[in-house]
Image (cartoon, rainbow, N blue to C red; front, side, top):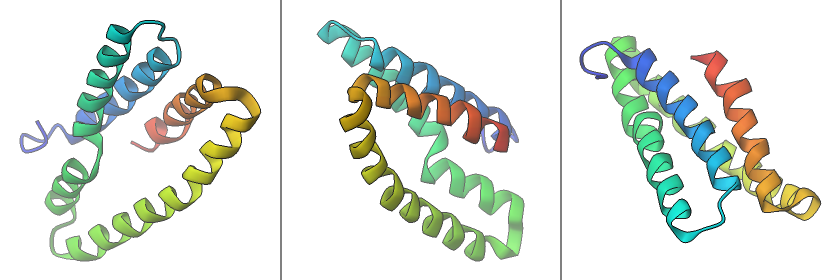
Length: 115
């Protein structure tokens, strides 16, 4: 879909699906629900992580793609530095289910509008 020019749809759909699946993950009570939620999260990640992002950037930016890929990699690395401690702190405050809901809301309120 990215190669056919539907990159915005792929990113928006992946962000929305990711948020829905994170909400589902926060509500699981059975092992099969856990597997289903992670299967959906895996599909969402396939459309929103580095490979899809780099393909879209390379196609849309043209000759400046190396700078764009470098910036994306830098921001991605920084986000891990910020969000691992944030997740740890939130878990100590509101438990793991609440933390997952906070991240689902962040995906909807931050990532989705940027697309």
